[in-house]
Length: 109
Image 1 (cartoon, rainbow, N blue to C red):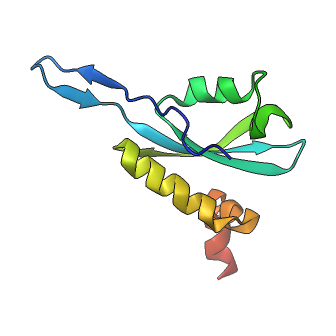
Image 2: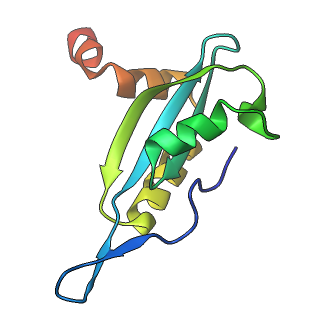
Image 3: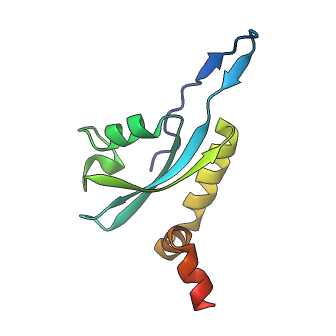
């Protein structure tokens, strides 16, 4: 699995001369063909999804097309990486599906 998508530091210059950090995202992709999930983080969801669905080497090079099924917005890259690591440590399809369907969780309880 990818440790960190979009690892380059991105920022914009504010009008007052300070730096404005770009939001980062944690995302989950799903492959219908492989019935697998992929967890990553990035600063540009559209660009990263296009990379996953283009020809390249790596986990997502097979099983495409990959579909974005979940994303969270994080204020910093550090926050996004922490959340990505947490989700990857769960290593559970059930955990991911519960995250994707929180209403179902409440009905099962």
